[in-house]
Length: 277
Image (tube, rainbow, N blue to C red; front, side):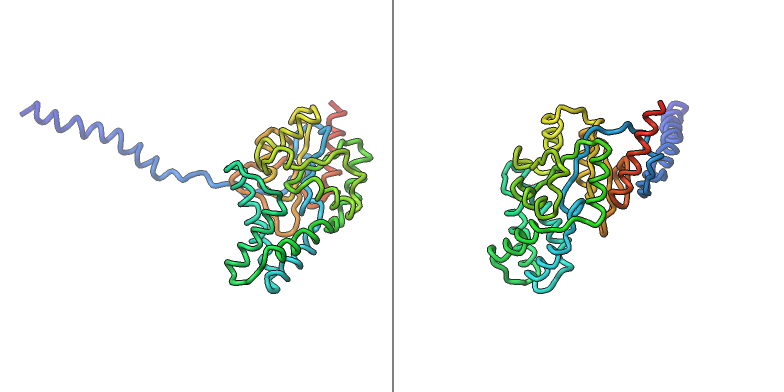
């Protein structure tokens, strides 16, 4: 009888030890992603970068003319531009992962046709291409860009660009926007046939320039672009262009600014701090 009682008691004692731990574990909430807040330069304990890489579309160039053109192609639905842009990015990643490659303009035209079909809008491929390629190559710079690039150039930074677009396309964009002279080099993902944010795109630039990741700052208005750059070890700066936001499941970029003038100011403070060490 005693042995039977002991056999019943031991499992109960074990449960008494296990169950509280199980209850605590079940009731402990998962960590909630911290909401991103803007940083000032004093919040970024970084060394002065040697090279600044700029994304192009939306970061430097205003997509407003493209929004109007895409909207016209979609029967006046300018509100569908974000859907088109995200569809284009989605399938650029599909091509990267499936080891296919078409130029970004081709993917953009195909994505526009997909959006049109989902919305019940008839659109031919040539119409889609015309709605994208022509305005994309004539986008104006944002109002802060020219003065910001001039200041960064005067401060002695090596300035380059890295884009998912073709090199020929960016060359035309920079000529039309008056930005050519600010950039020492232009890089296109067509060189390695993988789209950002694949790590190889950023490493391609680092290898060509012969610089270490921590000596390079990536500037973009897209959280996904900065996620790719940060993964490779680059410093990152997010420009809060209208409608753009950070991805709350990743750590903040090193700099969060509203325009290029704030980047200039932040980097000057970083340089001053470095010189005081």
